[in-house]
Length: 93
Image (cartoon, rainbow, N blue to C red; front, side, top):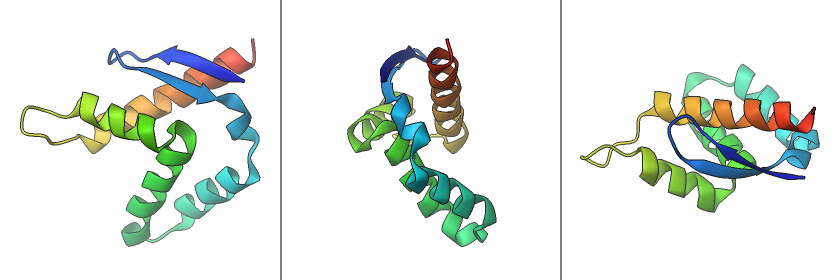
């Protein structure tokens, strides 16, 4: 089920909550937790793209970019975490 979620940063995402029941996503998350630091960035990008889709991931990056075009990793992680949390809450209600 696709949920439309407004994030505290002002960006709106659509998340398919059925993706949370995807074994491949679970494997990526497990691998991310165990991965050496040099592999974590690539896996994090894969997880973000799986949850949001490439198009929304890129749109969120652009939205969060500062005036010099930099995207804060902390803000991006916070936004994706918030989206997942709100999608899970919406799924359970």
